[in-house]
Image 1: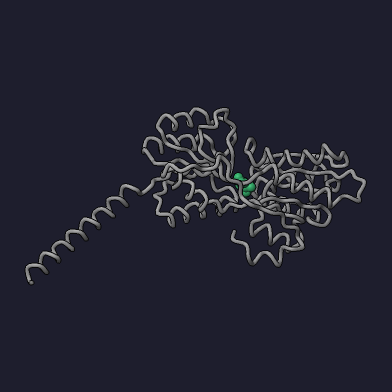
Image 2: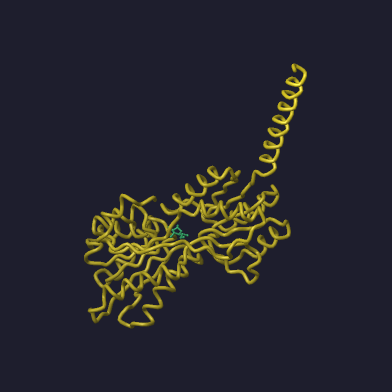
Length: 322
Ligand code: GZL
């Protein structure tokens, strides 16, 4: 009897050891390394996006190599080349601008490293250069803002003079949020864009541009159309310093729907905020795992978003996640 029990115990121990070794080895083999090139840290939206990517990678057990490009395309290209050299399993990035990506994306393709776009799009002829694009529909965001403006001014003859604070020149959100506004302007000539300049999605940029607009146009401005909350908050500072009451003398339209945007709506200084969710981390990590597993991934994954007029801001803010 003792011999049998000793043999059984030996068999159990060897099985357990094999399983443990196998598990750790398979876990070792299967750990995915993701190279992520982030635009920068220009706005509250970007900060929330970075937190979402980093925490989702941790939760997913994905080894994240993270690079901040400080809003420079050459830094993103350099980071992507570094990820290729390190032979990461997948590369993901939020392209700071739409053009100029073919060479480095062809290098990733030649290295057989799949690329996922998050947040912003690239303008390439060969769409096989990336597996999927996860993020907002910025043209629809612009259209939502346009529809809100049409409703807000439906009983007013005009002219409705709009001062536009554009995002980063050449970026998908700036191009498309502008395009959404242009559709309204083209449809109804009472809307006139009397000034349009980039504030590069930053608070300082929005303030600087709005200071110039206030000097040049003053009370002629009926609407400030800011491509993100940071620029809207900077413009609010400039308007107040110029004796203009934002949200009252001037209708303020903004994008992102960050906490700062909600607080400004509650203070009556932003009239409407078009949501643009930065919480893309979980969807990105799920797509990374599917790509590595050889599963099909949709070419375009659009985030669900809405529009917040100022009158719902106070009741909505407690439930906001960024
Ligand atoms: C939009 C994102 C934009 C935000 C800005 O998805 O790319 O960049 O609207 C951010 O706040 O800087």
